[in-house]
Length: 288
Length: 244
Image 1 (cartoon, chains in turn yellow, brown):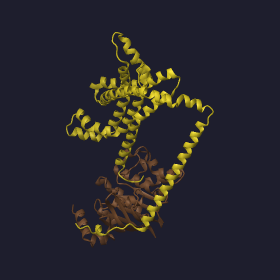
Image 2 (tube, rainbow over the protein chains, first blue to last red):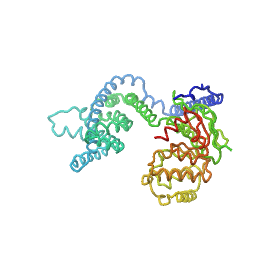
Image 3 (cartoon, each protein chain N blue to C red):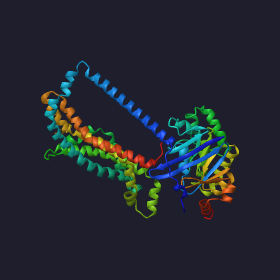
């Protein structure tokens, strides 16, 4: 088939060149407005804080550079514990969360006990405040047998995993239910068992749908591992507390806070990028 | 007077040059049917007219207004054009009546009871009087598409874009939708439609436009296009589609 239409060479018209120029001008204008208003807002906010009557005292107590420099190595060392806790908790949550989600998706009366167990678990641990779970596990479990000493960091990891498994299980289940039923029907029609349908067809599609939600839970867990300090584990927050008790200066907490932000920031940006990429893929063009 | 005019419209998706300088006009009360193979640019053409895709060159005029100017109010332009899609795109969480009256109430500021009365009378006229309170998923494909058409015409758009509105329907249901389009033509609606239903195109079109390689290759009355096509590509396309 000849394609005569393609032979004609397209030269961009004056009209379009003019439109592009106007668009460029308009976007330059809006960038400028955004820049000016941002700077103005930051200046006003900064001035309001700095000009308040007790700013000097607050600055000395919370933003003291010397104390910050002094406490930094200790707090960083504490953060290393948080990172290790996060590592093991993530693995535990991935395994337990998936198991719970699959248990809740089982059909048929035979599976009722498992289903009920999973439902009860997620109901309970999504409702319980993390702090209370930490106390129960951190102080209750060792109380059962004072002979055996379990490190508090391990108990903290268990408590955090218990809570987050429930959240992640619910996210995964929502994702599995969002996969269109026709996909299950197609898989079962090919002769795949329920388990194989889940593993090869449903879960891969479900994961793709819930990646942003899962990453959000991960970011949330990244800072909640700091709560293990209430059990006495010497993590970043506990280290900061120790220095604060010695110096009566709160700057170490700010240092710890900034370190937590630095820890979660790459993941937050990645979450945004992944969401944006998925949105682009699903929209396939169009300006609405 | 022309309701719609396209002058040298180009559209590229990356390196894919989909529209290669389209010139086209639709007069008031005219029904223009666009035919052509998949990938010839029919749908993209519709989407550029409704400003869903931004043109990369050329100009589109709606009743004389340049709607490709950069300062144009896109929502206002879209409010002047009615669109019906291949897959109906009704809102599943709204009843038929709410689907149909949404734009009138929310965009055009029509009083809810006025919009409602007009919607009910149109739905009744097109045999959907008993579906007013139903949700879309209770309706057959043909019924859903008729509801979608009522939604598009409720606010009296200057131009109606119908993009392969029967392609997703059971052959048994195509007829009821096409009958509705015939009614619209009889009432004097201005319609630009893309379709693969050649016999329908032949009976309802005032003018047929054959798209090939991203531009209208040949256009004329149904008698000219179907009876005596001038271009070899047109002949080949018609031979393929009618002797399936």
